[in-house]
Length: 126
Image (cartoon, rainbow, N blue to C red; front, side, top):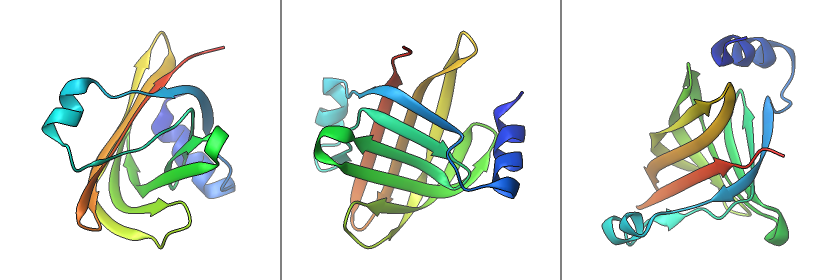
């Protein structure tokens, strides 16, 4: 079943996550060099929902939520919700990539609150 259909169906039925994935946030060195002032989100779990993408680091109970509107596998980001901080208006996008009929990568970049926000999650299937 295509992800856009699942997102639309889930949005009409329940706020529960569409997918919970386990893996890691990774950032190539060239990203840090190109965007030294951007916040690089730490994560080992991602929840994809009709409202957006929630990146979580279970060990530290940390998270950053990218919120917006889905069109296919692309989320147009309108806000970011950092843990224990007010929601920040933002502009940017998130993208879901697939390999072998499964989500392989979830990446987001946005600008809000006077800084850049990056999240680059690689799914590690169990």
